[in-house]
Image (tube, rainbow, N blue to C red; front, side, top):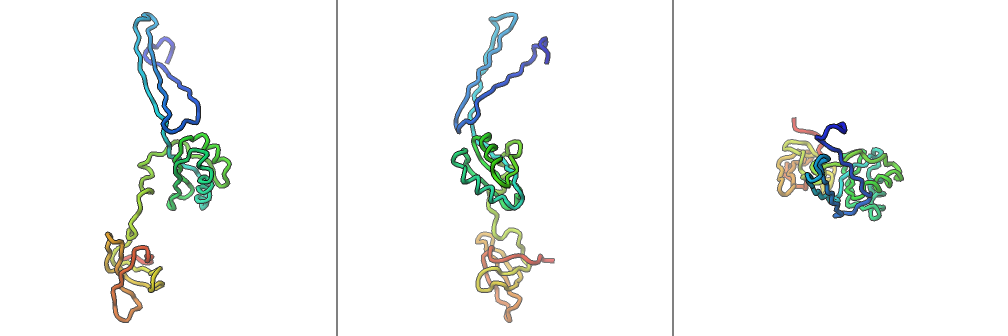
Length: 195
């Protein structure tokens, strides 16, 4: 854009760092014609401070350590929540207001590798926030090992799955008489899929 081109303009707004939730700023733009000062127009825009969801890069296997350290310092930094989902290795998700102070604090935490540039949208992490059913990934005919209860260590075949109650009915391999046994979904570990 050149000074002779009147078709556009660039606006830069500099504001102080460290806003709190709900802080607002009003920006009034007024454009006045150079040739005719009576010809002008104004536009007012308002923006409000809100929290951001950020990803903090960590050493793989030390996500919980970094999350616990952040939680210990959270009150001073305006951190609203910390999420360290098991499937997301090498990252901790942080919801915070003051991203500048958070970045400064992350630099002082062992095993933290820095803040990932940019902000995450809630729909990108929503699948980490909704709990998975205990029986998800198990289908009828799978071979499982019971990991809790009186039959702990026994191997069995899945006969029926009740997703509403999150229970599985299995038939034990070692039993002399095939008796169906109903157990909770978190009491089994799949060791073989149905072929």
